[in-house]
Image (cartoon, rainbow, N blue to C red; front, side):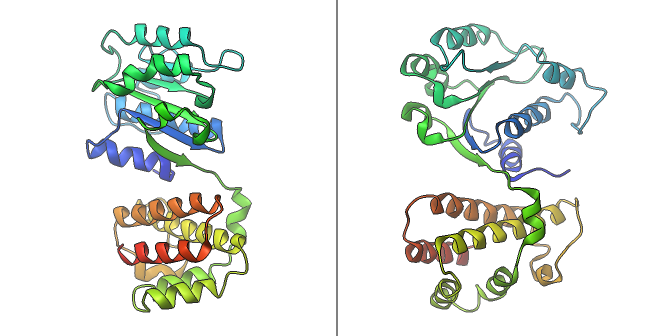
Length: 276
């Protein structure tokens, strides 16, 4: 079963019993991220073994229809999320969940929490209960109040135009992956920077690298066959290894959006890559 990096991170934390009590998710596709969260909720609450398009378990139908009592979805009322909506949420979660393992709330457009509504939800975040999990979804985490940001695990869920995947030039990526361990830090940094004429080139390199490790993760999860013979030496490394790379690349993809110094970023990236 194929999962994107965002969902796979949640699944791994759940199985490792390290699941946070609240997540702030920045996305460029609200609906896709919301549906991913719903699917994850089905997985962790499933009374048997979860599978896509389940037609046996009543819980999945309750989630899809919006009738699961232990799942509360809050959307802005006008152009703000109001304090009264959060008070109602708190009242709903005074009782333990009956049809599921967790009480779960999803707050859409979390950047529209104002100081009053944010303060109302802080108790859930400051004094978390084991059976309550929250998801705050936004298109820009920096627009979410700092009191919320600091109390959530921050995740990113981005979607590329599928047509992009058919236009990749992976030559530089393959060269880098074949040499990054043996060639040394200085060579790798100098080699890469010689190939970049602009910040866009650096961004494309990271995107292509991300695609390669996403492909390797798919292979390790038996959802596809190896597409590039050049990657055969990276097979059988295990999903944790590929996810570590994806997390590293995601971090530097986010940084490219800011006015960073490319040379310093490459120094740091190549150093961290050597440790994987």
